[in-house]
Length: 102
Image (spheres, helix red, strand yellow):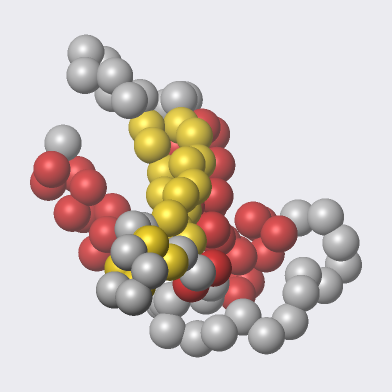
């Protein structure tokens, strides 16, 4: 399983997918943002990568879902509170792998 995951990661890089460029425009033509990401733009944020991977896994018969959350943020030493910003948000894909589960 580890070797398969590493092969997929190498293929994604070889195909020209990148998270190094800011997406500056919306999806042209309406309602297929994941298809636009996968087939044309090949650049995006964690939302596009996780959504695209979940779509491809599901099309391949693997149960998959997208999860979202935040990193812990930073501790404000004056107030003792944790401060979380929108830049602390993250999205990832989860796949069901028998017999291990999610």
